Amino acid sequence: MTRALDDAALLPLVDALAVGDWVSGEALATAAGLSRAALAKRVTQIEAWGLDIEARTGLGYRLSTPLERLDAAGLSSPALRRVDVALRVDSTNQRLLEAPAADDPQALFAEAQTAGRGRRGRDWRSPFGANLYLSLAWSFPGWPPRLGCLPLAVGVAATRALAASGLTGVQLKWPNDLRLGEAKLGGILIESRSEIGGACRVVIGLGLNVSMTAAQAADLGQPWIAVHAAQDRAGAPRVSRNALAANLLLELTRALGEFQASGFSSFLADWQRLDIATGRPVRIVGAGPDIEGRACGIDDDGALIVETPDGRRQHLHAGEISVRLEPRT
Image (cartoon, rainbow, N blue to C red):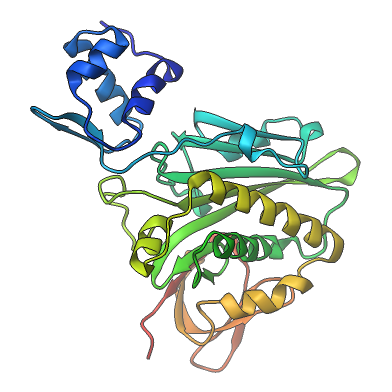
């Protein structure tokens, strides 16, 4: 049985197809010193990464959309001790949770994830080179007050990065979703742990749809949109993945420094302006019987306030609950 090649050995084929034009199988095979049969096996292997590859007799192969790989050197930041780009990992959050805290603040991008995850253990769709999969590890000297508000501050920072990248109109859905209209654009997952001496270490995971195709998102199960599709729809130029990644690092590190210095107060007005749910009917699922009511913003601790039909106001923390936006009435 032929042994599968490691990821690095397959990159030349990915890069040969990256422009998105048709490339003949003969040219690809000749460049790699392979038979056509061996080339076809390599194509199958990289398709398993989530790449959307078309094959046509007489034309060869092409990616359905051009691919831009991330450049770690170009993403270096004076605010971070290290920035790495992995080809494929199980989960960028998991890799940084296992990394030494002495290297914080540090960031890790991946071109693809094999076990990306969101809140409540959900899988996160992670095709190669289509989106941004970023984790950033940050060590606070102590536990910040109202740490539960950190996902909200990170959401505000992400909208600032997107606006700087030419995409406006992004809103936030409590506690961790980036939305454009009724479609999901990205999500945030923050994991924290205690460190020796009372320090608090957080790993902030952010997944953002950039150029994902319908084929790559098949059976996703919820409305979604990607940055490039939104920019195309608005008649705006597409931002490069590298420029968008750099803007995210800039805004996230700024936000973490600001949160460390002054908490959530400086983010509150922006979060309220961007909140997609306030005033809308919502249904809360995942914590016993469903709760139906009207979203009324957040409290000082970042909990969602829901007013039920009997006039009571419940303050709900993220935990294991999920918020479903109901049709406007």
